[in-house]
Length: 372
Image (tube, rainbow, N blue to C red; front, side, top):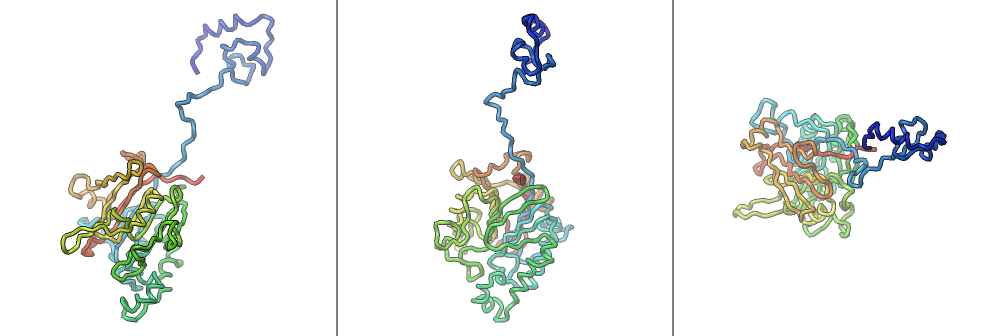
């Protein structure tokens, strides 16, 4: 409201009819409109109610919470290197976070001893919530596959106890450590910082060399217009995070064959589902040589930006910090992620193509809505 000089106040008083008897609650009828009501001490009603200009958006913005994710995949039973080994980014302790996501291939061949080792690594991670899915190497977590062919093919007909394996990831010890093992489906979580998110998870990928959790490449298990999709991925804005073992087609999924030719081996049906879903984050692994992160802008026709995380020093920053960092919050010094218009894709494979644990874990900061 503009400031009223005392001169204008005096002029207003001078113009007031002498017969006027101001009454409480009716000073607007007895005083000049230019006289501010709060000086009259007679009326609680404002003469000049505040009306914001149309250009000023007075709508309350949704409250968000800065939330950190540690992303790993394809650890294949490998424990992190000791904290003193600064030549490897995958070392103790794993990056502290609100949420740890493991995108599968916890083991090499799904033996109980391997699961116990992998569980020890995950359970000790400094994160409030640790979400884990299986991958094609975790054959004892795909019970139908294991009964059909896995035990014979991988374990020489000396079967492991699949119930005991699942107990490792879902029993009392897992619950006490904040470990949540998820099959294919949708779950929602609320964190201690108030942040809430909904995640879609799936351990399945196109059939690969006779391993677990396979589906035929022509089969579409992710889109609702397919008869094969028992749990399709819903469209935006239902899902905040996708966690799948395999990548979508054409995104951090390139392999180089022995003849030197490159091939994108991700799932085209998963890609179509992601384009509908447009999550904030899609984390996966499976293709070790695809380690990296890309920011896709759907609003600009699917343009992509490879995330530069080495700090311009040949990767020394990643080794020093023990992770590759991406901050997509508004206060992170860059552009905040625009949900529905952008998605961050991360291939979090720790192993390289020769099964050496040389790739860094990822640390990703996102703004998530706070539960009302």
